[in-house]
Image (cartoon, rainbow, N blue to C red; front, side, top):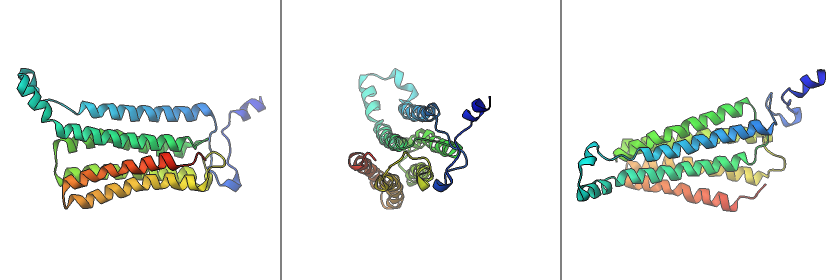
Length: 224
């Protein structure tokens, strides 16, 4: 009976490694965290398409009017593409990072929820830039992405501090690359805020710079 009770207790930290007070090593729990995260990313991406809407009177349009209305939605298409790529980049970053994790704790669950909360907010931010080309809309979208990136950064710092939740033998180079990849997103969107005071189109165009950073990390990052 004593052995049964002790086997159900979560693993306790190694003092030398300074891990958090309680962490869990069960594979099912970690997989549930990842599956739930993937579901939130998938729903957020799906909701982007629902923001593309024709005018209510479109059902009465003829062929030429319908084509004109579809072409007139170009700004909504652009917002969809930008946000799809942004969420996709964040999902890839999340996927890369959790491939390096082999344990979790309640603090990681909380930090991951903050990341997912900010991801779920992106469709609304996308709807703002799809209907407005103003500086305020551009800054609002950029600030949303900065918040997402900062939550990602906080989560990664927590995971890697003293190798708290990492698999064994993850190199310092790998940890630094993952940190830089998230931090570069913060930099890109902060720069776009500055650019918005010069030209909002230029500011929005600068957002595509997050893609080279993600591709670089994916292709150059070592497996450990």
